[in-house]
Each structure stands twice: as C-alpha cells, then as structure tokens.
Image (cartoon, rainbow, N blue to C red; front, side, top):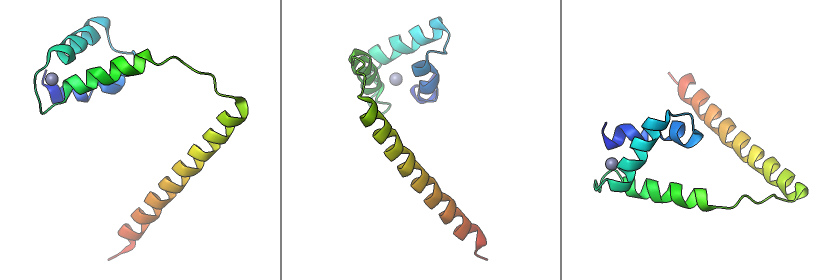
Length: 92
Ligand SMILES: [Zn+2]
C-alpha cells in the first residue's frame, strides 16, 4: 500500500474501526516511513500528541456557548457554499 493510499484510511484508523492487524501495519509504516513527500512521520507524531492530551471537562456554560458558535459558523459556511453553488448553476 502506498503512503497516499494510507492517507485515505486515516478516518477509519482514528475512529478505531480498522482491523487490529491493519492498524498495527499502518502504525509500523508511519513510524518507519522515510518518504518526505507523504509526511507519514508528521501524521504519526500528530497521533502520538493527540493521544497524550488529557480529556478536560468544559464548564457547561462554556461548552454550550462553544457549540452554539461552532454551529453558527458551520451554518454560515454551508449557506455561503449553497448560495455560491446556486449562483454558479443558475448562470447560462
Ligand atoms: Zn509513508
């Protein structure tokens, strides 16, 4: 499997839905890969650092404000995208 093909499986790996043997092979590749173009080492270091983060329970009020703000931002982004697509498809 090529480095680029492994990138397509990152979601599955991170979600933990990949077969153990396959995920172990992915990790072995990322640790040892010397391809400078694929940035496999960077991917692996990112995983290692993310796993080291201790979960922190946000105060409820902050949690709600953060989620509301994120939802608003995503809604605006999706509306802009839909609006742009409507304009693009309505032109002759
Ligand atoms: Zn690689």
